[in-house]
Length: 530
Image (cartoon, rainbow, N blue to C red; front, side):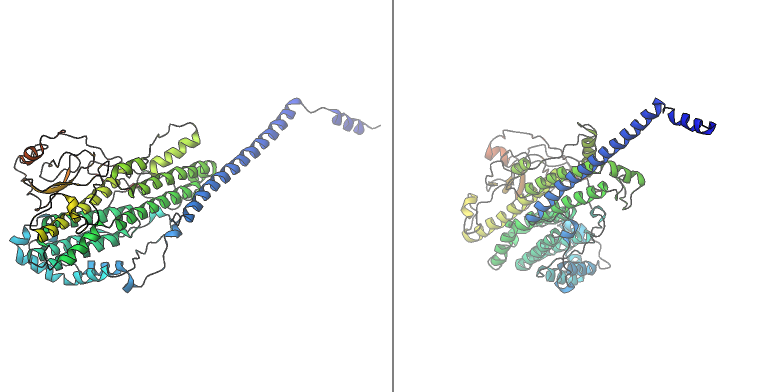
């Protein structure tokens, strides 16, 4: 036997050191662990995707939009699209040279209709094309806002709605002028054109659009508060009755609210889904721009924690559902029982994955509570405006106002007008013999203060406390800035003399959540409302 063979045999007999066996075992263990982790990650992602897909299927079965493509509609020819007519109307708005007052001036100070009558007439004549297009839009059946939904919904460019607010002011000023000139029929038609404008804005499925439409409604109601007595006569009776029906119809405001909540829900789902698959950056969350492309860190986070991010969509969609259902309730107290205001526990939570989901929710979700307040407040104003017109029709027929609102049913109103803020859904308040005859809603706290109201420093009615009045002889003049504001609950003596002392002299002022003192809502993308 050679030395070479002996050497080979000796090498084969040398045992592998123990440390190498442990390295192999550790390597195999790590490999198996990685397989388990990958398997669990795949199972986790599959189970979350299945839950989200089941919710999407549930919405589709109910006929509700939830995906971006669900909001797409067939193109509408310009001549059949109300939006096109309003765009033409907006382009026709002009301010004649040599006129020292503006539509904004007249809208905020109606006394200018009398003191600057010639200039008002010049403005109206210069904007005849606007009025013609706005009236034509009212008879157009279709509405197409032509949204581009190809990118992330949260980056969707919203149309400018400033021209619609300007158009609403122009229409209500024109209505006031026609009423002052003794042409109530034409005044009512201008109010109807303004309502049609608001309803077209409501067709845009965004929360901002609904808030603008509500602002238009409030402008119409406040203008009618000043003019309702002057537009009711025998010749305008049919027009006024039609206007009453339109004001009492809740379908347009409620449908608009539902559309907005559907779009909010779809936007949350689309945003969370893009974050979960790493195609939408998280670096800009909480403010600023929302770039479409993501960074490697975002894609790595999505690879590891994507299911946790996507799982938050389920709670987000349920929250949007509660807000949508709340808007259709008959009263604000019932809406608040239905509405689930989001709680933001921040980074506190039982597990890292849930903490991440809660963080996503706290960044994306606004509070809709303030918007719901405005929604029901506008509903109350529309009901009181319609009721005031019915009272004036009753007065036209009987020579005096009814002693109770039940007397208006069924000849002037289909049913007794209910207060959307009253916890028990009772009839709105009515003070026909007060120094300042008025209707009133019990307001935000739901307590009947017998028509007592409070003013802000500059004289405007404070709708956050006590009752919300609607004056039948036109609103009393606002307090001059240099004068002393009325004390809380002071009403010139008529409340104390006719209704007795109010049981409550103050009310808790509910603070809007996720909004500033002016009620401004926080948008889900960090930008303020238009």
